[in-house]
Length: 157
Image (cartoon, rainbow, N blue to C red):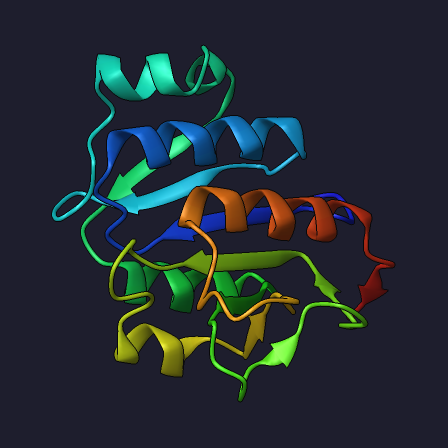
């Protein structure tokens, strides 16, 4: 993959509107593809196509059995895996020295990323917010992360 490449893994994003919006954001910001679990996730339905405003037709999407295995395979291929985590213990997205190729794991609407997947990530990152609202909706957060991932200076391995 070329420098600047990034992919997204979605951990149990179940709302078709969110999935469609994430796919639309992925296409808009040059994400190379989206990986989601076959179970406990919104499927690739007409509702997702509609919510993506047709972007689903332009985005490679893989439905797989195990995101943990996918993370292992991505690491074997040289990807750095970042996990989106709203906690203050995660590194701020601003100023992050992003390593490409990169993979971003986004968690479910209610629970975030499962603990086992968090442990598999190379680094946890958060979006710095200026209010007391706990976190952004996963689709909104994806736009912020994808924009940042598409613009960060690249550190080659």
